[in-house]
Length: 136
Image (tube, rainbow, N blue to C red; front, side, top):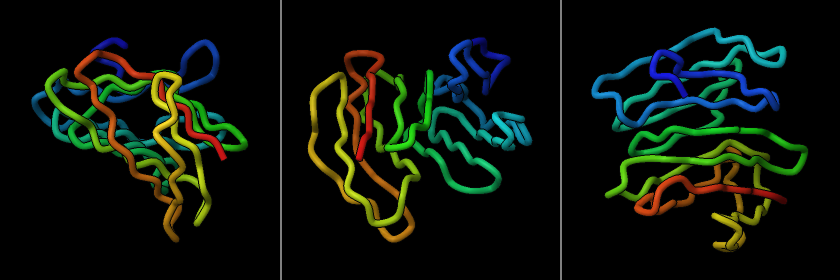
């Protein structure tokens, strides 16, 4: 993803967003995507994505996210961050629903979202980009 593009629509209509290498906060607001307005805030300490003012994604520390695609039963994306850190990632899904979380094809177990639909998990980014699949 180009440094001047904090959020882009990929050829497969997925979203790529965030830049964990930025030293200072940067944001893009009102980015049109699939009939919605997206907002991304990102830098080395945090990356957040909102859709129409509602929570979609957050990571601490900041990450770069590639091919983020919401499906009828979950979400899929690849994530990259600082090689010496573990990222805590939160995604917004359906309220009080159980999802299986897979990282690089391996299940890390089933996780139930809270009343607000937030699902939390950690990803070790020491080995580079990781693929994440979250399904009901």
